[in-house]
Image (cartoon, rainbow, N blue to C red; front, side):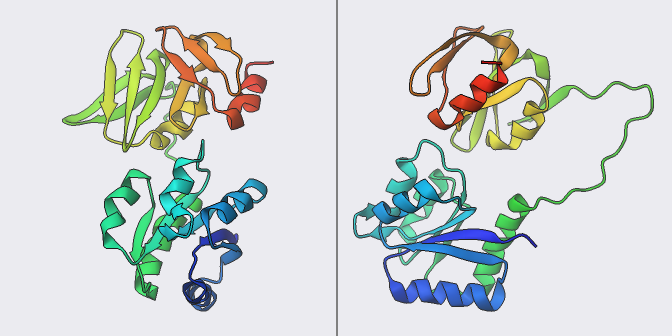
Length: 244
């Protein structure tokens, strides 16, 4: 099994040791690549190191753990919150934390949390059902709505935008469809076609881009006149994708 690189953000050395001991005894695939005792230390570590998973305390010497997430243009790892304060649960959900663990953390709770993580880190790959010979590939995208599914032609999507735990799809006919799943659930399906995730909150149809305006990240103008930001860390990949 591939190691999971973990950063512990925790100002209590005793609890950091407890976590590391729990990992060593029950989760040998977890590799603790660092421990940060403040938001500043965590920010400096993440600048130079790639991690898969963050164990994040909330009450830190220089602010709330959520301040670290809010300050990042993009959060390229999963987050499990570890805290003694149950009143932070709603805020953890708003920051898309994978799980919320109250101290002291025990093995059963950690197993549930890591089970959630491993489903994302190593998703199961069930056998793909082949279409009968001669049938075209299914090109409609099922979008879960409040009363069922809306099936849309993928090419009719101009762009999709994250709205917390939901996503909003803007269509060529001017309609906007709000779906009851986060944007990330659709990324793999869309990027198999001519779509690109230009920002943590935006996926665009490259065929519908009218203009790119330079900047630190810059932005694109879409065929429906929507202005979509391009994140600084995705800018180079975006420009390469469009041949620049």
